[in-house]
Amino acid sequence: MTRPLFISIEGGDGAGKGTQIRLLTKWLHAQKIKFLLTREPGGCPSAETIRTLVVEGEDDDWDGVSELLLYSAARREHIRKTILPALESGHWVISDRFADSTTVYQGEGRGVPYDDIEKIHDMVIGENWPDLTIILDIDPKVGIQRSKANVHESGQVNQETRFENLDLSFHEKVRAGFKKIAAKNVGRCLMVDANDTPENVHFKIIKELEKRVRIHAA
Image (cartoon, rainbow, N blue to C red; front, top):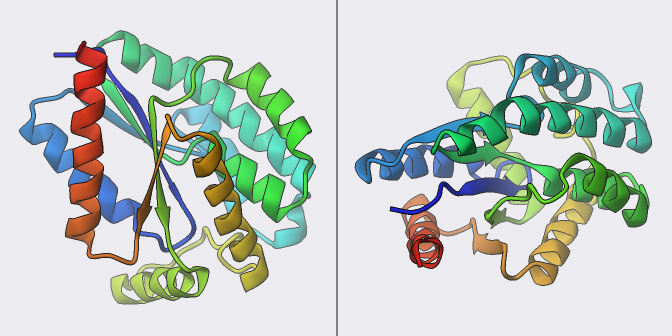
């Protein structure tokens, strides 16, 4: 019915990305839309190797510039080996995080200059930005509490806590960064209040998706 869409889901820790991705995949199945679900960092074997390096361990294992380069290397392989082949085969691509996370976590959070980040993005991403970026906005205090509660309820050991364990001020900078991106990229980004019920958040996302489908089918 339309060319395949590339959609990224963004937000701070505990914003409910996993829940919204599950609801979105159910909707895509119902619409009989072929899709690929992927994530960053990761999405292909070489990028998954880098994921282990950057999301586990201690905060001082890498500085902001090192993180930028590692995430960007993983992203380049992700685009080349997973995202572009899926789109070319007619599949929508749904990515749990993409380059906007690098901009806010390493830019706002770590203090890497935006100009440097944009130069790297231009080299790594080029024109291959998502058609739609959904940003789930939540108070960092609430988000961190949610994230820790979910891990506790699941009974699983979460090894990927390198960023979650940073102090509240870091996560507040991340939230502010996402707001800046949403304001700067109105055509690409949809910011949704993640404090609402999962069902209401999902409804808002689907309404936007239906609009995008009509646009791309025209």
